[in-house]
Image 1 (cartoon, rainbow, N blue to C red):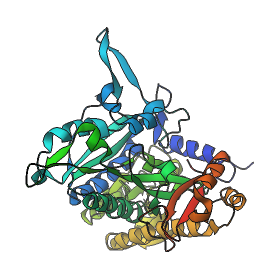
Image 2 (cartoon, rainbow, N blue to C red):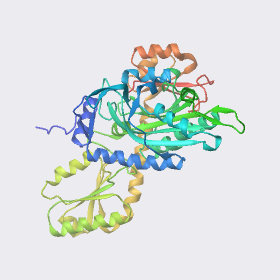
Image 3 (cartoon, helix red, strand yellow):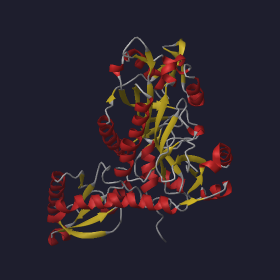
Length: 470
């Protein structure tokens, strides 16, 4: 009788495969309150690496980290009508504290535009205070009716950037820079996901924004996942909170603003973009553990050698773990590391020592081959870069193969059954977008005819990318 697979095959049940992998790879558990999650150490290690890579890019873009309270007076949210209307169904509101009813209810942070603008209005006085570029790493709460771990949870972790500028052009250009040079660079060159950069339709914009820029990734089942967004807020929040600056004379002008964020949803995107029936495949540039050195047997010489190899690889700049837990069967340990998607396994046993070799298992392309132990430290950095490039290439090939040009709404719905459709926005328009939504298909973004990000929704030649989405 054949052994049952460790994971439900993707082709049989993709959602079940996803949940199986989260459990078996020890990434997260469901929390005690519906829609919450407990992120386990290995899963949190992925998020920490995402934080490190993103934080460096955000700081290079000139933003500084700060922190704002998670409790927001309810009156703050009512100052910007479109914003509060957009978030009202998702709000968690605290009405009692310390055993007493509060004089004013407080909202648990769903996003921080309102509370940050309360302080921007104090901090910005003259043009010399601009641009003001702030980022915070925090948790947010949005009451989720259909939760899925990492993808849609009531509480999740993220970064949210908030900026104030003297002119519309400065704010527009900064939002675009975050979109391309911070988010686009990270997702393409670190996550290895071939995201499409575009602008949201008016229907899909962030509540209170005048423009939303998005990054959309195609998952392994052909659905789309919004990986991150950057918003032009115009002067909507500035007018609501009277955030102004003084010009050269006595005249005052409202600031122009942006906000932008990515979240632990990226962990879900990583899983669904690169995972296979054997588990995760973690991009080497992201991986907290790029290589694991496994002792096959508890032989003293083997144990000594795997520790020596580990030290050599660490000295070569590789993030490495030595697994010498020989009281646990080797096969089980190998499967566990494969599930976790560690890019490289270096397996060493007594016979390997005799030959001066180790067995190199590459998780991303698959396969094993013997390699000289003395050559490992020099060889592996190049192997990791090869495998990083392979993931991005596979992501791009999947998106291109499963994206088709269509001309009608019916053709768009058919395309969205297995992938993405590309349709003229001029022909589809808001009315066609509404008809797609009735069938569970959405316009993920609008791109220019050449694939770039258009300046306006109605720019000549704009193409709508349509898909079913998470």
